[in-house]
Length: 291
Image 1: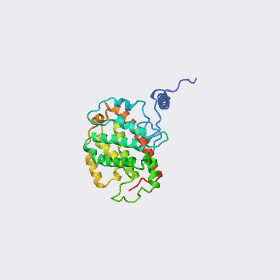
Image 2: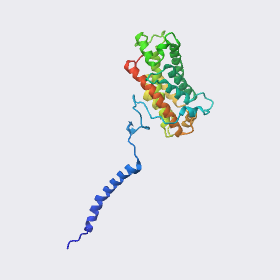
Image 3: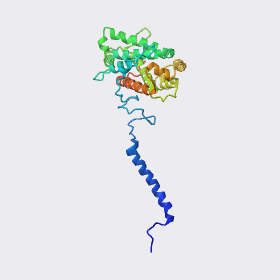
Image 4: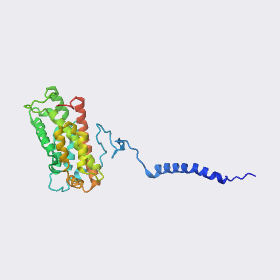
């Protein structure tokens, strides 16, 4: 009579087959019911983006803005002796973009005025950028307040006016001539990308990195190739004087890294929208390399 029970010598073979199968089914079960692993719509440098972005363009960090009304919360706080308020900066950059996707030049300059206060609050480290930016703001404000100020209401109208009236110089700028609005804003546009990337890194940093390293990394990624060798060396030395992340949180007026993440990524989101529209305008008009 043949026994219905498997031969004892067959148990190892059965176990070798059933054990991997059981592990696979267990993994599928946990993935479906316990782990709730989300699908990343964005991958950056081989890793998932920090936040699930909305159609990012020009390699920028576009994140879904948290529901927190950051400006209102920060406006109620005292942020020390410096005059910088990130809530005001966020409000200015948000106000830049109209419903039809235009960038208002006046609000753009107001956003930059707050960025300068941010740089000044970090010490003299950014002097080589902030002093130049003040000059550029004055040039653009002069165009806004001038005879043809209405033509400078938006970045798009400024580009159209200056191209139609041959104000833009596509060759080397003569020393005795005031730079065009398009050339002036292009320099600020490039620097805005650097600061956007730096704020993003500060906001997503787990807290172990040095701010000098974060800033230098952003600088080399975005702005350095537009500067001479001498300016790059000055920048490298200047970054070493940047305060630690804890001091950065004080300047931004947040309590800790978790709050810094919400505030800074919300701010970066507003800046990126302005940057992307400007980048597209300059690309369409072939002016990204104005001398």
